[in-house]
Image 1 (tube, rainbow, N blue to C red):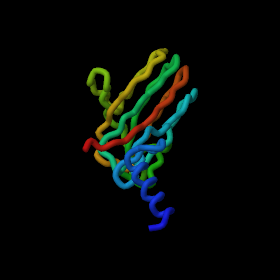
Image 2 (image 1 turned 90 degrees about the vertical axis):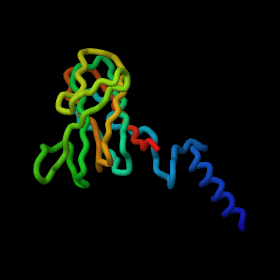
Image 3 (image 1 turned 45 degrees about the vertical axis):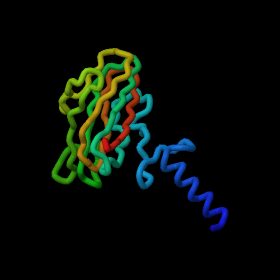
Image 4 (image 1 turned 30 degrees about the vertical axis):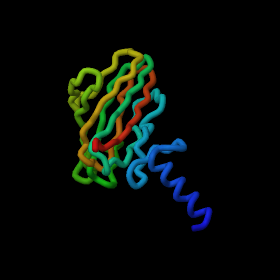
Length: 154
């Protein structure tokens, strides 16, 4: 076997086990944290992420003096547009999340309400392979960031 072939095998094995700054599992599925919105100061529909290979996502919300409501949404539709109204051709819904601090459930239609707090909150959502997931923020004041990390509990 040639030297380049051996190096390629070694690098692949290291990436598989998370060495070298990569966060990979299985056949190379990235399981790291994704930025849905970053320090936004306006009402925002965050970036949606492909989540169809996962059962669960963790949403981390970081607020700075924020007043507003965060909601989390998923869709099984490949060409969904979360910034447009729900319709027969644009199918998405707000999802329930579980507060990882105390285990309480937040109804998807109600979301997480912030009242001027600077805080970090963490929520789990059972998505069962929903095609895309995102977060939305209806802002009154302050700034917010939201991160998403999908995973399978195997």
